[in-house]
Image (tube, rainbow, N blue to C red; front, top):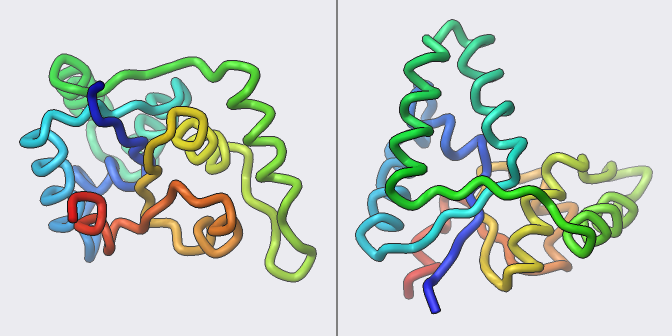
Length: 148
């Protein structure tokens, strides 16, 4: 059985955006490739990444080509099935008025990890704080714990 991870679009975006934790994202993706992990993401990943490229004034065509290259290596875009969608809905309904509710977009990535018995890697602290009880999630800053 091949090892899998679910990679949040916000982590992938760090490959072309200038952010403080860009180097962490590069290290993570390098390690995932070295270990021949399969990266699975919801099909909405493509649209989220290209939208961020566009609004960040980064050439969207270059980002699309980067995604295509990563697909040839180990990235798979998947349509969510019913169990995954139902898990995402459950996660969205698990929030609280005070702390807020997870977005369906974020929950869909996390639910994909849960239904594939793997880990969702994100840089979104707020999502993790709202959904930690579901497990199957690690923050980008803690990515090394996946391989220890």
